[in-house]
Every structure is written in C-alpha cells, then in structure tokens.
Length: 114
Image 1 (cartoon, rainbow, N blue to C red):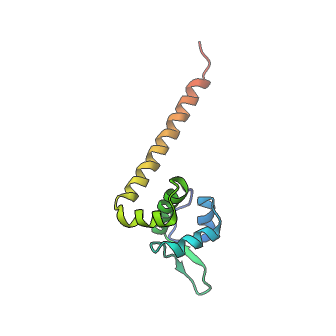
Image 2 (cartoon, helix red, strand yellow):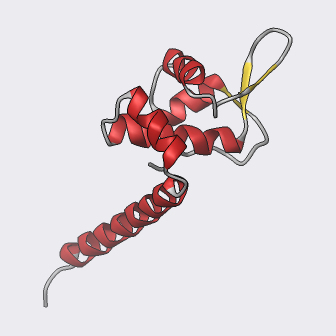
Image 3 (cartoon, rainbow, N blue to C red):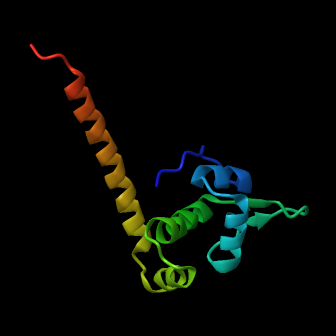
C-alpha cells in the first residue's frame, strides 16, 4: 500500500486516517489493540504519529485489511515474524513496478499503428 504523506516528524490522526482511507476511530482502536502503536499525545490528548508509527500502521493494515487476518492473528504475526516489515516493503516495491509496467503497456497500446 502506498501512502501519500509529506515527509514530516509528526502526523495528526486525521492525516493518517485519510492516508489509509479509514476512520479515525479505527486508528484509535488499533492503538489500543497493538502495543507497537504509541503515538505522542499533547496536553489536549491529540495524537501525533511518527514515521515509525506509520510503518507499523502499514504492517497492521496489510495484515488485517489486505490479508484478512484477525486482530489476534495479526498480533501473533507481528510477534513471531521478524521479517514482516521487509515483506511489506517488498510488496510495496513490486506494486510500484507493476503500476509502471501497466503504464508502459497502456502507452504502447495507445500509439497508432503504421
């Protein structure tokens, strides 16, 4: 999954929810369910997510939304599979390559034949 966020030190929960196309309540729920998610909170209680939190959210999103894991299953996978972040990174790169190849294919089929 590709997230379109600018490079910053902290992201608000709204920015994160829009990037993942989920409700803010789901982000808050995952925060309670997964101990690896620990966003910073200011005095008002507003959450601010770091790039590391985004990486962890991307892994959780992949396991739960894309692979169909239960929350318990995702927790177990995070605890037992040390290479899960590498796998997610590889999937992202492969999806990028696929998209580029599709663009190339479309540009070749759009050209008039001589």
